[in-house]
Amino acid sequence: MTLKDMIPNVKPTIPIEDIQPILEDIKSILISRKLILGPHLQEFETQFKKYIGTDVAVGVGSAGTALQLLYQFFDVANKEVVMPALNFITVANAVIWAGGKPVFCDTAPDSFLPSLQSLKEKITPRTRGVVLVHITGHINPEIEEIKAFCKKNNLFLIEDCSHAHGSEYNGVKAGNMCDVGVFSFYPTKVMTSGTGGMVTTNNKEIENYLLSTRHHGQGKNLMDCQNLGGGWPLTEMAAVLGKYQLKHLEEWVRKRNAIADRYNKAFVNHHAIRLILPHGRSAYYKYQVMLAPECKKEEFIARMEGKGIACGEVYNPPIHLQPVYQKKFGYTRGMYPNTEAVCKCLVALPTFVEMKIEEQDIVINAVKESI
Picture 1 (cartoon, rainbow, N blue to C red):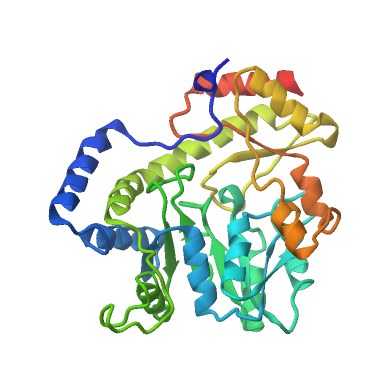
Picture 2: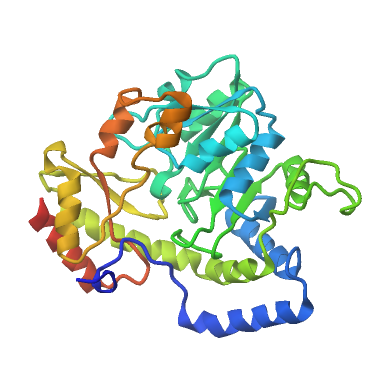
């Protein structure tokens, strides 16, 4: 069986009816020669902040760039930033590039999200802030308590929304729950601009800083550089794709939730599967379940691949077990036991907007046959 024949784990959605207008907009960009910092980016930012409900949205070249600039804004140099070990390595790398130190916390038992207590255990006088990650689009069930704790202790709180385009809790969208939100538009995400990122906030100082630093730290112009920055804006062509993707986002999140609901009904009483239900509405970037430890996840994934189904994982290995962090910082297995135990059990089943019911039924039957 070839990769082409398999049911993929994730797949970007680009509606056929969008292609011609996208090409027309790109043609207009090429004719205008305005390749960056033009009207399409401004329009995308305006539409995105309206969707999220914030006063500010700033497009940048990637979510990793956004995080580094935010860490610079919050002045993390020689300070610590607490984040989950179950996380993407870029979130931690950006702290290092900004001169700080990432500090990892464990997940809550049997969860892929940290608890307030696990965060508290890592707070020291050197802590400058905290990063929450909405893994697969799930909002942390203790987000209100974590917000209150950070505010009381004068810690910034960033929500990494790379999986959470359209997630919400109590009517508030991800990206408008904390001091600042960061979105990724990487090709596999809920919506994409090819690559790129967006920062959402209600803080005008953050907006002014990002508008400067994403374009070489400029003030009035590039002859008046006020900050240490770089060439990191979201391009006009990426903004065009992002605009068209955003138009479909609500529909796509509903479809992803419908897929998740069918999976939940299929597996709710399965003896070897524990469901992971969201706190509020999840964007379901990926649909993850937790297999019983005796299922041996690697063997399960291999059996599913043999049936033509690509399963995935989210952040395995966790950051502290990435080779570069083990070599550079001396992290070893056993330092974050809950995280490591969860990683042995989490598996992501195929979830993409264009998934047919027949394809999902094939996945459901294959799961039941493979455990």
